[in-house]
Image (cartoon, rainbow, N blue to C red; front, side):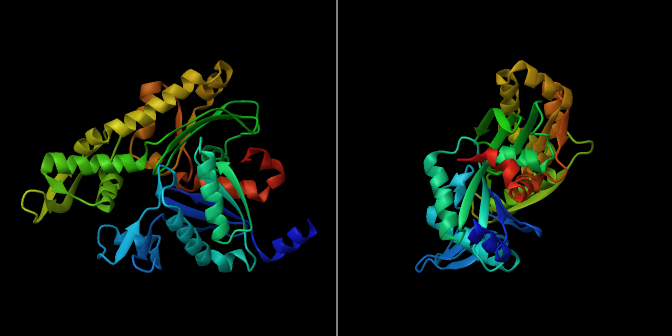
Length: 341
């Protein structure tokens, strides 16, 4: 115990939101010190890293045969253990000067319902990347803490955390999850729906980075006040030459209707399965949207109209999970009960 306190003088606790789309790192006393895409690029022959994060994302769809650019997480869990370990290690190296000299103690957010095998993969990746002690916390619990929900009260609070690979819905009361569900439909599926739109309607192939930009710039779940348009460039599937088309927000909204519908249905299902007293609390106080998907235009309005519920977007939805995990690390004694064994 004394040795652990001495280590704490030289190494700072670190919280990580290891997301399908982005990885964020919070360091005690420093705040969020890293927010980068969960992408890694390596040399195929040697396995040595070429780039991680923002730089590696630029490689997607643009590499030569000697370089592999990949997103090692899929649907919120590790799809490639070796690449994930390498990515975590490189991210830790990036922030090591802020973390101190000693290997950090880490709290990592994972999806609800993560399997024992998936938990072990996350823990081993962090250990081999240089962490000395690892704790896990479910992402919706961390998001609820980060969004400022009163999880300690004997009243129901609902959080809907929409990431890149998963949508997490949870009803929380007295530091415990009364209901939770993780559906592996989120931002990535919205991107894929845009890819299919361009391919099917315009016979044009675009990359995933372009699809994501379309989603950000003109994607919506509910009709905006003013029509939105965007020029999109890609490769013609018929003759293989470059081509540019103009698409509208309505086209993108219709393409995204299926994944958005799954998200709305997961919220509806949560109410059906939540005990009536807690459901009544949520109806009174509303639900909170967190994660990057919370920024989809009009999603809050669509849920409000479909389910007749008050919907609030977290103050900073992109950092809710990592900020909540960071808050839990700052007060381990109070929040240890919500860590996953």
